[in-house]
Length: 257
Length: 379
Image 1 (tube, rainbow over the protein chains, first blue to last red):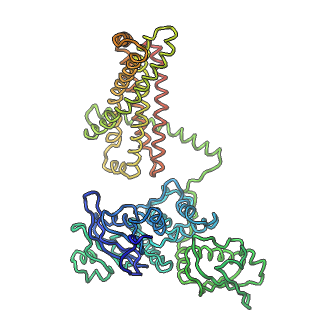
Image 2 (spheres, rainbow over the protein chains, first blue to last red):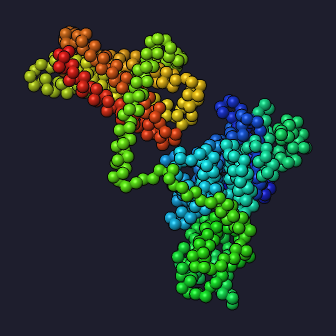
Image 3 (cartoon, rainbow over the protein chains, first blue to last red):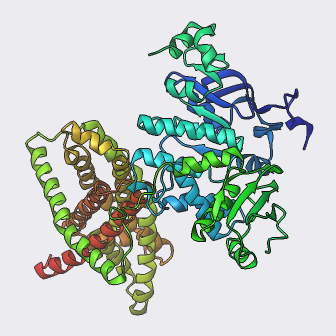
């Protein structure tokens, strides 16, 4: 590993480090000067108003959109400076739950979840089947193995997508608007599952959301993106930001009833 | 694999008939699990087990693989009337298991599609085809009614949309139509020349290529190109709109999707395909001329005269009429399949394929029917 892709400084707790990142579509700047660290075992919330670039930031964190400037480190590896092989290796540690599920429509739910297991593990068919059943049960979809995504409701597809995201027991789980479109009990259950995954498997979790209830229930660290100034205007534990954020907009956002 | 050589497990039989399973080291999903059969072997070896408990003091890390393993032990115990004591497991294992068991499995599979025996599948498919006929006729009927509204100036669509679609299906198709027509004209000329050379009347290449391209082949080629190019794009576009609920949004507004989406597309193709057909015929004829003059030493003037004599207005009329018919066929097939599309990426693919196949089938059927009819009518 060359020196260039090693991260400066040595915060051993840091899992993801975002350094001077600018996100832009061609000339159009979405966010700039982003600097924050996501620590091991954090449940890190990316929040902000609609259209401020939360999902774009997530895209660059999961390796599908390169930032136009700056670096993103996973532990001490600089993702966008790494070779394709190294990038692949880093990406195998990710699990992503997309906003509208993004389950592959030509595969059944069970096949959707077993695909990563078949591709990237040595497990036998029998074991894969047991893992699939277990993961589906964890998201509350036991018994739906043979269903195609088009036969499921939106909320169920979302949970199916989570089951796929956790199929390989990822080190980092990314959620894009996890509770949007879920009924309150399901949303609460999902939050509990997120907490449980963090507590028992030590997964680092990054959540894009603006559901306040969920933010307070699970988040212990956060960054607040502002769409007008195109940069981050607060970071830290959302429960503290609620009362002590310097920026008034942030306090207002977090104190909505 | 026997019990003894799995590094992650250690067994100890306690005096009261309890088997203690010690979990050790790293449990990683990327490695193989102890195979399910070993538990059965366990019973044969040790019949006196009445209880199994765990010890996880020395476990380093664990993930889903441990949960799967525990699940197997659990199943085994309930099958063999062995008490299972889970208190020795890592706390997270218990909580994750509780989470997984919190919602009972869904068991009503009646709502779910499953593949039946071959015969019933054939029956189902036949019935679907049969029930498809009135649906397709209904769609065609609605398009006709929509044309009625168009002529009474009551059809709701935006003329900008119509212009855009015309641009896409007409001018933008010129390059591919030019290329294909030119090459087909060229092939016709060579093919004809080979035969005509024997009787020494190569000059009739002009008749063959001119009449062939303008009356028949130009329309057919344009029709098939448009089926692949435009019919497919209509089906994919409308199908994706169906997936994104855009079609539903029109319906709730009370805007007729036939008027707003289908009519401009059919209209655009009806207007553009005859022009493309004409263009295709001319390009093909030009190709014949180039080959005739350069390869077979026919003078330019002779070839021109021969072509003029061979062609009459009727040839153009027949070609353009056929083109217009193919245009309607392609537009309706594309829109029909798009509007009937299901709600997934898979369905969009099926709709697109089906649109192209349907278009080509109907182009061939109408082409044959028209050729026979025109022959009988002496046109």
